[in-house]
Amino acid sequence: MKAYLIRRLLLVIPTFLGISMISFAVIQLAPGSPIYMKLRTAEQGISTDANTQEILRQTKELYGLDQPIPIQYVKWLGRLVTLDFGESFKDHRPVRDKILEALPITLQLNIISIFLVYLISIPIGVYSSTHQRTWSDTFITIGLFVLYSMPSFWVAMLLLYFFGGGEWFNWFPVSGMNSIGAENFSWVHWLADRAWHLVLPVFCLTYGGLAGLSRYARSGMIEVIRQDYIRTARAYGFSEKIVVFKYAMRNSLIPIITLLGTLLPALLGGSVIIESIFSIPGMGFRGFDALLSRDYPMIMGLLAVSALLTLIGLLLSDLLYAIADPRIKFEKSD
Figure: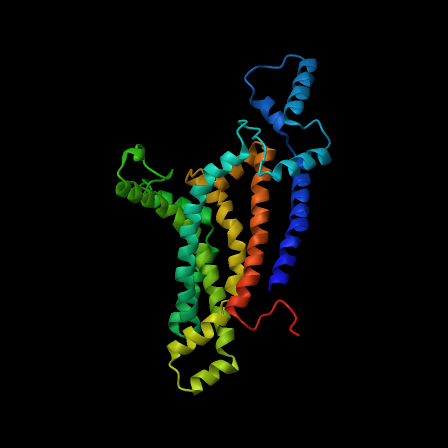
């Protein structure tokens, strides 16, 4: 296990370099430029072509965009060693500070959402797999497919219309994470106010993953309960509850563990659509704003964090395989 872990950690370095290199090139070659974005939004007019070219030259020199792309990448990589993602082109603030500001907000949303997804989907999948071809299984299957097929932005707009002060009910706030003046609330009142604001966005982030993960849990459990050792356990007279939760559950978690490895980058990446609709200044909202303004340092900072977390998530998945199923070995036995 130790040798395997060392090999995988060493493999992370070239993989991350390859991902960052491709991402950097794609961003630089994409249409649009932060310089023209700045000029488009500048308050002062540009009278002649000579002035225009001089402003372009100065702006490129200010942002370091007058250098070849390989040189820009090497300099960015050198700063990355010290966790310096550079300064934002939009407001000249350190990218690291902007990420650290948005990170706690995104973590709140996604930790609650992922917890609810696993808390609800695994029992649903287990129940559905142990009650195959019954009316309850059919009803659950239809309901989950309906949930999975509904786009999150459409559901978010419906929730805002019906429960966010439209023509129906004004039950939940439609934007932000807290009410105005929440800093003066007591901690109990502040916590209740924060939970009240999170109801709609958390629901939109949860229902799709819940529907998908339930199907994975069901299919994994169905495959396991057909194995010979499950029949043997039943032949020994163990109750169905012991057979399912003690013998079958552990081995059926392999597909779910695979998905868990991909949740780590999603945990910090945020949801662009949901955060934008509900005006939540999280990682997804910041990433979308950076794309619109062609804020290269901010985009690369977010991509670098996501790439690193994806690689770490895949490594954690491999390690959890051995915990869930001791038959899985990463090294050759003598």
